[in-house]
Amino acid sequence: MMRVRRLFRVVLVALAALLFSGAAAAQETRTLYRATLVQAAPGRLLELIEFCKRKAEFDVKAGDQPALWMRHSQGDQWDLLLLFPMESYAEYYSSSRIALREDSDRGARALSAAANPLIAWQEDVFVYGPPFDELKAAFAKGTFYHVEMMQALPGRLASLRNERVMENEYSKKLERPQNFIFVRDQGAAWDIFTIGVYRDLKHYAESVDIPIKLQEEAAKKAGFESASAIGPFLRTLIRTHHDTLAIAIK
Image (cartoon, rainbow, N blue to C red; front, side, top):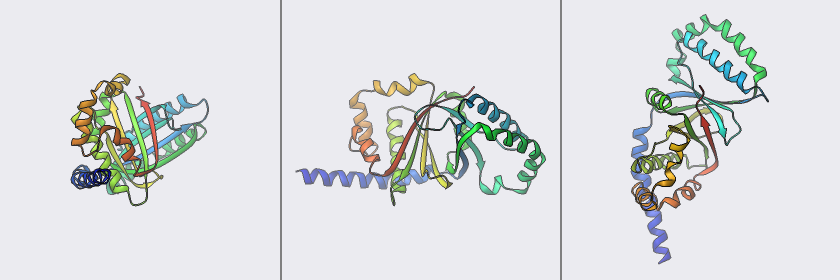
């Protein structure tokens, strides 16, 4: 009986992977972002935030979109996460965009030099993610974020991407916010990170009030064995997993 149940579970997961691989491909976009994680020098976080606000003014003058950003509340070591929309490499590094940046380059260089003492640690990763308009609209309404950053086990990146889509399907069936999925192209070591956007902390915590029966139904429809199996299944696909709760910056 145990063998039959194990076989059934394997078949269920395999079918879910096939089902959601199509959904994953459908949701895959080619919107390019540079994600920058920054840890402020001790005692200089507020100065760093002011620097980022001034830097955004130069970005606009150079024809770039200002970053969407958030401030760490608890979790990983970074203080700020900034998402710079690039559209594509060809668009961002086009001759016309480069010319605009060069026009304001002197002031931008001076500002960046002044920021060096404010930063203790920084890393960048280029990722493909959702359309910028969708992300910007969500950030405009939300003030609280749940960020999950993962490295896949060797050979499991596609499966991890599918699992993220399955979790979104699970959240959708429970009428909960779905995560924005970002997949690494180059840069830092993260393979995938996701951002969940919520109105506030209370909105984020409302999931605890969802009846177990509804959670179980949603999990099975999304392709999981059960609601309690979602976390253990994710851990069969990843080498590292960092969670961070963050807040909007006014």
